[in-house]
Amino acid sequence: MNPSATIANPGAVRPGEPVAGFADLHLHTLFSDGTFTPEELAQKGAQLGLVAMALTDHDTVEGCPRMAQACQSLGIEFIPGTELTAEFDGHEVHLLGYFMDVQQPKLLSAIKKFQDVRQERIREMVARLNNLGLPLRAETVFALANCLSPGRPHVARALALEGLCSSMDEAFERFLKKGRPAWVPKYKISALDAMDLLHQAGGLAVLAHPGLNHCDQIIPHLALVGLDGLECFHSKQTSTQSEYYLALAQRLHLAVTGGSDCHGLSKGKPLIGGVKLPGIYLEQLKQARHS
Ligand code: AMP
Ligand code: ZN
Ligand code: FE
Ligand code: FE
Image 1 (cartoon, rainbow, N blue to C red):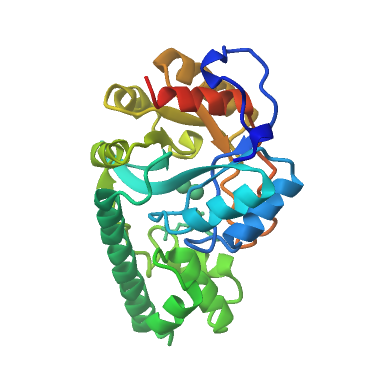
Image 2 (image 1 turned 30 degrees about the vertical axis):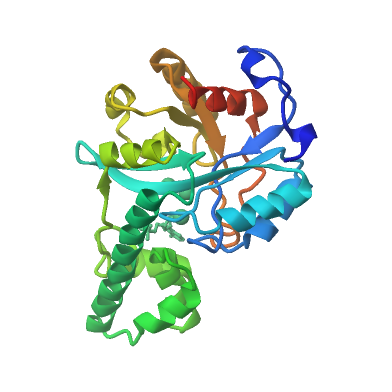
């Protein structure tokens, strides 16, 4: 770890005390549905002057060792992470895990199950597309995804590359969006089980992009049953929403996190750099590991 990226004596950091540097704690690579390699992502972070980065690929921690190495060589602090799709009280929520032991067997076996289900879901989406007359093959999607956590963006990209749709957006609009004919719901672990899994692997559980979920009423419940933090800063959340979630996090004694949710070039301009989490919040997140 780069000494300049480490804040001396983090235990002594108090709210309001300035901490140098910014972090991005929500990032995807081609180990799930992003388009950058870990090395490319770390390089972009370095160019933007980030002092810390977390990798949060969907249902995988596979990219973490490479990202750790890339960050280390650039003097950036690395936080291992993931983004799990979960369910609470009938609502889909995304839980960001941070600081887990990415070798822990129980975590790895749960992740293997999520990935098997994702692969099965791809086959089901392709079967539906075939029934609609589109000659796409599941193998084409898997080859293009080239990762263990394939998802709808890979199907959309395959449809566009095969000339079956004019763009990824059109693929989502016509076939893959919720309610469209090739949409298949995603397997969701219960939020309680997901938080347990992350905690047992030595990690923290943070509610991703609450502003996109439209179910703020569940946040106090989640806080009572193990949630550690709230993603107050996110590319798709407004500054008004950030203020609201900051106040909520304070009221519920939740750590504050933030990140760009950059998926590389898959959704136009890379979002990295659009959200910069002040270092003080990362220090407080680290303290939450021991409280
Ligand atoms: P999945 O996890 O397989 O359900 O896929 C979810 C991913 O699809 C998320 O990263 C979304 O942001 C992405 N997504 C949703 N709509 C679109 C779209 N119109 N174009 C590209 N990606 C999209
Ligand atoms: Zn994604
Ligand atoms: Fe998400
Ligand atoms: Fe994400």
